[in-house]
Length: 228
Image 1 (cartoon, one colour):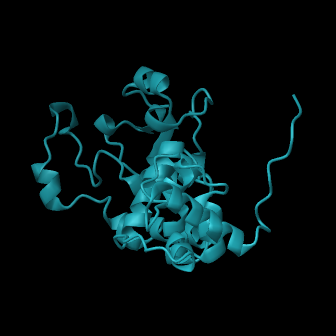
Image 2 (image 1 turned 120 degrees about the vertical axis):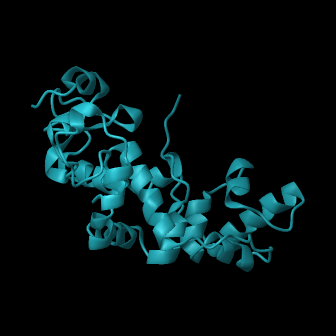
């Protein structure tokens, strides 16, 4: 068996890309075509390549003389929340290709449409993560403090923060520590990432960046309410 390099598509003429879109639409007998339909039905290139070349998938459809795909406008806040979810699921900063393969609800083109480039989208996300508005969301209000059920062992302490870290705070911990268990060094992702209180919540520890650490499920269970 001979190995060959994959075809390099950066210099493919626009007309060739458009013709391939029309080919797949004709194959399906459709006057419009979603990016997924293109990818799943034998497109010679990727919808991502075409979207980047023409600015968006819809712009490519327009150039090809096909009907546009009507899409709901996605807000910047929704994109930030989605990136929080992906970051926590991966346990690290997502890269361009992760948005196609991970649990992301939106594709890279949604981010590029809003922010111009993927890098700009990440910069905007970091600003959002560090903003005062999101920091304030981690602090308990007096109403929450009185309405939240508290085990008897924890009545000795009047906490200023909520017990469970917000998605924003989880991302901050991962930005600081990466996705490795602080006790054994194993790489953790998805459901195996546990955000542990260094000083246990039951002993007065607050849910703050300084008092949180990443543990794997084994060591989170073993640690229990010990402090180390």
